[in-house]
Structures are given as structure tokens and as C-alpha cells.
Image 1 (cartoon, one colour):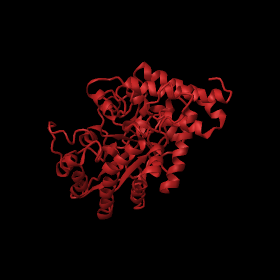
Image 2: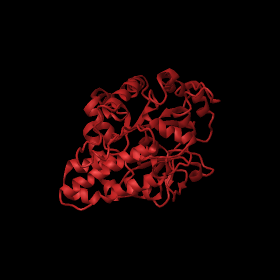
Image 3: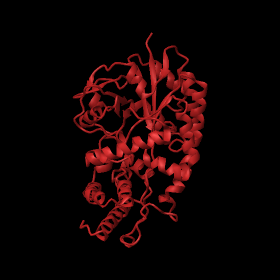
Length: 403
């Protein structure tokens, strides 16, 4: 009898959004992220809203599923910036994540603390943020992550090689057709040029049925029930693991309660486990239970965003390229000061969301960018970010460092 596992992996992240920081603030007011009078960039207010709409109700249901189904398991990644904000403003939400982990059947995945693209700009900063995140996860959840995911699932051969040498047992990536070719994402793979590490690739079609299409009444698959979804998976002959990777905020925030998303989640384990041989596994368990069926070569960088599945959502225009280069050019000088507040602000500005908000794509992808952005347009995002960057230089100048 063949075994098939659902590998449910949810990503939790909240950035520190830069307020509408003006050039008149630069050199005077160093609070880039504190916006009590602006609802769209008020990080405290947004955390409260997401906790109420998504984190608390979803975790209640997940805990019930873990208690009622011994076979049910899942994997999570939670950025350092999200943990910090929950510690400050939504401790009950953080406790609900701790309660999930206390079951012993929820695995935390490693990543960069500040959800940054540092891997592509500063390997030194990248490794520092990965270590910071690991330490935070150990302190808060009592786990040491064994599987790695880079920000936005940004992945290439170099990242796999780094993760292999760093001792991770697995790495997560988008199961993009141009990389997989004729192969299916429903198996375990091994990256080229690596010795030990395994590669789990997201089944983006099945994942996006839940994350993006679930509430779309014009979609041919609507309404998506747990019974129907399980039937699709059971009808797939060639598979060992269905990698369902998505943002945690899919539940309650991107797909609202009235779409039926919570009912779908509540019924999925029961429907899936009806068939003998079906189970759930964490990312580590699927790596431990199945041998890789092939090697995957990814010389180009792939991500899980937009139709191109590349870094263009963050680095596709001149504003994005100029601002991220300008930021990393200050890294060594900022770190040389030993000023923890200045270094912390620099790191908060490395978060990929700031560059995502500057994206100027149109059509479907542009609509998604606009939905997530706290700014009227990409240019406002760029101006606020660069004004904060100018203030970083003021702060360096005040310490006698020419930037």
C-alpha cells in the first residue's frame, strides 16, 4: 500500500512598515516605524487586526485538529519581526502559537529574522539574521530548526549549497515548471551540487487553490470543499507528498471567514484520513520517510511570487534596485558604530516588504501588490524608505562617520 502525506507549511510574517516619513523628519525624528496617527502604517493596529482575524481563530482550529487527530501535523515559519510584534502587542496570539508547538507535532522552519533578501546582497548579514532567528525560535518555542526556507522562497543552487554546508536536512522552494520540467512537485528531491540536503518543492497549483482561488466564485473549482480537495489528491497516482505551502494569513485575512475557509480547514484532516495510507507529515518527517527521486538544478533564482516566479516583485524596477543597493552600502559603517538602535533600524529596513511596496507591475500581480501595500502608490513607498535612509546617514554623520 502506498503512503501519501499532506505537508502543510504556513508562513507567518508581519513587517515593520515605514510610516509616511518625510524629508523634514530626516535628521530630526528617528522613528521610522511609529505611526500612531496613520492607520495604514500603524504596525500595532495592524498586528491587532491580523491577530483577531487570522492568528487566533486559525490557531484555535489547528489546536482542535491536533487534539482530535493524532496523525495531523504541520510546519510553520515565523519571522523575528512577527514574533517581536506579537510579544509587544498580541501576547495571546504568540501564546496560541506556543500552544501549537507544545503538542510536539508542529515544526518551526528556519529563515532570516528580518525576512530580508540579504542572501543576495550580504552573506555576512544573511548568516547573522539566520542565527538571530534560530536563537529567537529556541527561546520562544524551544525548537532548533532543521529545515530552511529563504525569504519569499527565493531559491537557487547557491542557496541549496549554503544550506547543505550549514547542516540543514532540507530546504523549501517553489515547484516552478521551468525548473521541474516534466517532473512533479509531489516527491522529495535533492538539489544538484549538494551532498546531504533534500529539496521540498511547493505544489503551487494545489496551494494556490486554497490561498488565492478559494473565495473566487468565478473559479471552476468553486466551492472548494475538503471532500472535493481530498478527492483531487487521492486521484493523483504518482505522488508521495503534497506540499501545500502558503501564507498563514490565508486563513481569515486573505480568505475571510465568510468564504468558508475555516470550515475547509476544520474538515480537511477528517476527509483526507478516511483513505488508508493517507497521513500528514512535517517537513522533516517527509524528508526522513521518502528518498529523493531525482536531482533538481536551479541555476536561476526562483521565488513563490507573481507570474514570473523570480525576484522582479522586489527588484524589478530602478527604484527597488537603487534603494536596496543604497541600504546595503551602509551596512559596514552602521555595524562599525556598535549602536544597537541604529543597527536594529538598518535591519528592519532590510525586510523585503519595503521593496515589494515599490513594485510598479500592473494587471493581476499589480493588484496583489496594491492590496498588501500601506501606501497610495509605489512612489510614496520609495520616498518614505529613502527619507529613512537619509536619516541613517545623518545618524552616521553625527558619529563622525562619512556616508
